[in-house]
Length: 129
Image 1: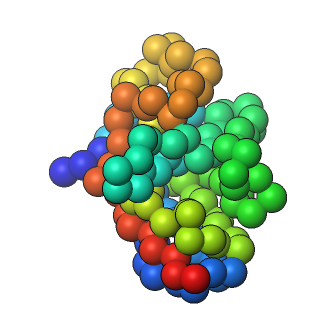
Image 2: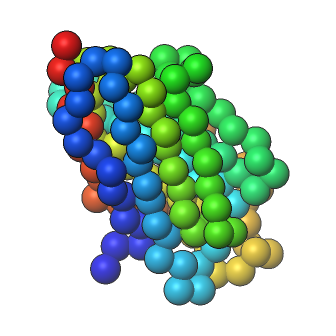
């Protein structure tokens, strides 16, 4: 069973919206930061957005003003509201986290470039023009 499970992907036309969800199968794990990254075929992984326990959010320049990241339930659920989607947003989206088994073990920062220690199987987003 995957520690992280994404859902909400699909196919939309340009200008449309999707909301991605991710559940952290906590089972004793906790994380300081969660985020989303994406990867399109033939392209490198791209960090999309992250959020930490202070509420600090970070977005890729390419999605600022269009995407909104949020979390709830003590960082056990993560969401990505994606608006005004464009064909270049088409990719598999992954939810990431740095799970540890106690808060004392938190690394109190989000990893650079979306390089989380754990991620789910991804959910696919396809945007047609």
